[in-house]
Amino acid sequence: MPAAQRTIIIDRPIEAVFSFFSTPSNDLRWRPHVKEIHDPPEVCTGVRIRQVIAGPGGRGIDADIEVTDYVPSSHYAFTVVAGPARPRGEYSFVTAGPGCTSVTFSLSADLAGLKKLLMSGSVQKSMDGEKASLDTAKRLLESE
Image 1 (cartoon, helix red, strand yellow):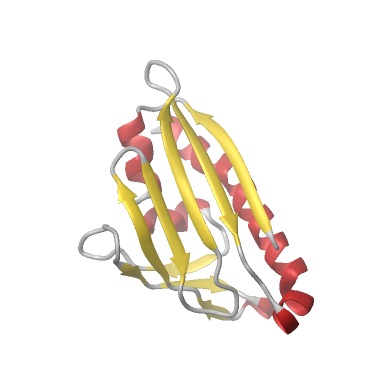
Image 2: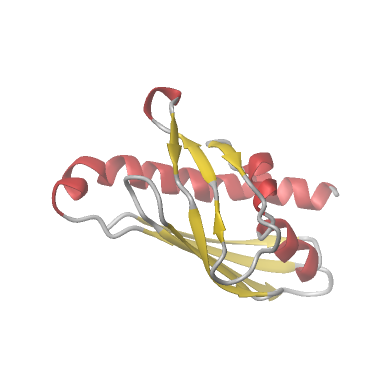
């Protein structure tokens, strides 16, 4: 099962960090494979967010997400509901000192049968890229 997890410390208050990660349009600034994403009128549990990611050969792949948990300044979770892989992900936020926030990101995908055989490597590579992109998010947040 492809999976990824990483914790980073960001030198910004928890409210600002949560807001950044839970605002879908910010993904265009720090997740390089996101080609298109749309902010819904309100982000809350149950909302669906349209997203297109770069696939093989640069072609766009629908990868819409549904928010499965939304607890301001604490937890933001989602499930991908479109596309060939349907990972689940979450961000947990904890105060890590004055003006600092610890962000734990995790992502996993249950692949079975032919999908497991054909897609495990590329899905894991994509997840590893998501983990690495957290460095860009950190730089952006700490420069604001």
